[in-house]
Amino acid sequence: MKRILSVQDISCVGKCSLTVALPVISALGVEAAVLPTAVLSTHTAFPSPAFRDLTEDMAVMADHWQKMGIAFDCIATGYLGSEQQATAVAAIYEKFGSFLFVDPVMGDNGKLYSRITRGFVEKMKDLCRRAQVIVPNVTEACCLAGVEPVGACDEAFAKMLLEKLGNLCAGTVLITGVSFGEQLGVAGRDGKTKEYFSYSREKLPRSFHGTGDIFAAALAACFVLEKDWSHAVKVATDYTWETIRATMEENRDPRMGVCFEKTLSRLPDMIK
Image (cartoon, rainbow, N blue to C red):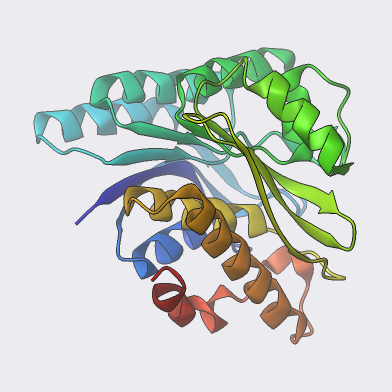
């Protein structure tokens, strides 16, 4: 069985990060190993969550895995809380030599998160240089490309960002949240062929916390199952879209995340 190491935090309430990555990866028939970077009572969209940083434990756990001869088919990163954690991931990647899949979580809607410093951005750029796949949203793509951050962009702007990001990451680059008229989706540049591709679905009127984490988890799992990128992007996009639509049927605080439990059973058929 293929194995992904998912490196991100555990937010105990408010479905995102590891609490969604683990079930989504598992539903696609891939083993989900985890390296928690922190434990929070809720994610940070809630005020004043309890927080325990696990940076010092990351290298210790990786050393134990190496001693046990444990290997990973993919190291997939989500939210990293500090420059030190980004440095730790780079060291773990060098230790295990796996495929590196980076979701460079730094901001959204045209703004960087409050904890993101200039130094962190440089560390994230270094991580992206090592990666075979990066999956920024529009705001993060702007930041990595050295462009003034925006919250939304059309296809032409996305193509410009992809060209710039091709100088940063030699692998495949996928930008999420790109507007295609009445649709919203993904614009990408294949790392091997350098060809442009895109996929989109109808824009939905509501948004929920954690949908980027669900998309990235499904995409990473499709990769290790050796699906071609056009199919992988379609599966991840369709699953995320269907899950948002299912959650819209609930009277739900968007901070609590999407009801992926309602759609999880569909994933195995979607990947065929």
